[in-house]
Amino acid sequence: MLAFLVIIPLIAFSFYIYAIKKTLAVITPSCRTQKPAMAWLLLIPIFNVIWFFFLLQAIRQGFDAMLQKNLIHNPIDSGYHYGIAMGCCWAASFIPGLFFIAVLPMFVFSILHWTKLTNARAQIPNDTGNIEN
Image (cartoon, rainbow, N blue to C red; front, side):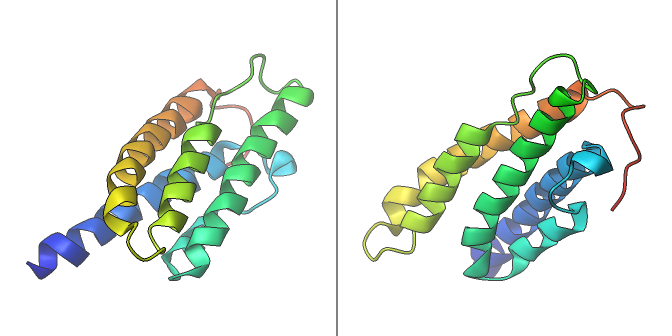
């Protein structure tokens, strides 16, 4: 039972954090507002709910900066709105009585956001810039 409630979600969340880290890494270093390794701060309880919104903004700003510098030719949808919805459900899950109402949409929005992050990374040419961790 412990594995189902704690260990499996923690492993899945670690892969989600890794997807965020990889997305930050494909952004050209001169366009980044956060280093990719900063995504791992999401492992800090309570702080992670707030930090998630900062990372969403950093990804969005990075892709926008790359577009302005003509490093990419089309706007990239990184799933910002899905991420915001996921973060709001995540924050709502701390309100007593809303946990079970917020968890299912949070799960759905996190999958949608993860998919958008993967698609966003695929749109970036490999020669855009140096990938740093």
